[in-house]
Amino acid sequence: MSAPLAPHLAQLLHAHDDLDRRLERHQELLAAGDFRGACLEFHEFRAALLAHIDAEEQQVLPRYRTLRSWPSGGQPELFDAEHRQIRRMVAQLEVALATLGDGPLSPRTIVRLIEDEHPLKGVLEHHAAREERFLYPALHVLRPAAASN
Ligand SMILES: [Fe+2]
Ligand SMILES: [Fe+2]
Picture 1: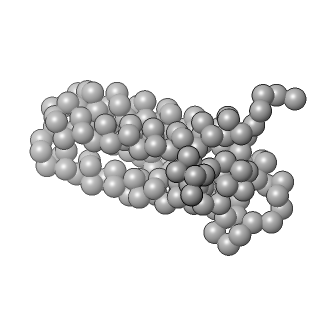
Picture 2: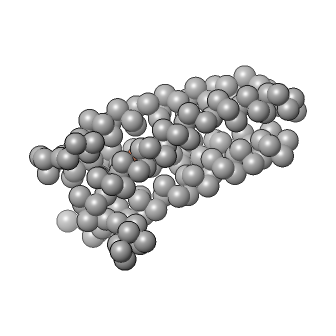
């Protein structure tokens, strides 16, 4: 058998905060007028996000499915559907950034980009909350703050 499961799953859970910070840094660079830096940060955010989703689909959700009984709002197909939605949204944003060339961007374009990214932030927040309420606790992985309550 492989290495102990829980520490590895805890790393995946903690990645939610890291992903949030990466997207925030991307938007801070956009707001500061550093379009090249913002694009690099978005590429890294996207790569980390997709790797995170792949890891959940390969290592977490298969174990969760073995439980065979899930609470309302915690059904495996909901996580699958949100992963598909997130992949689609992040790909669309990647294309939107690519169409802007090398910049610099007008203030209006910067505001529009940040507004266009807002739905993804909302979906990610909602998705992480669902995973942290149902998926990870069912596999006995909690955030440190939640674990100490
Ligand atoms: Fe996920
Ligand atoms: Fe996740």
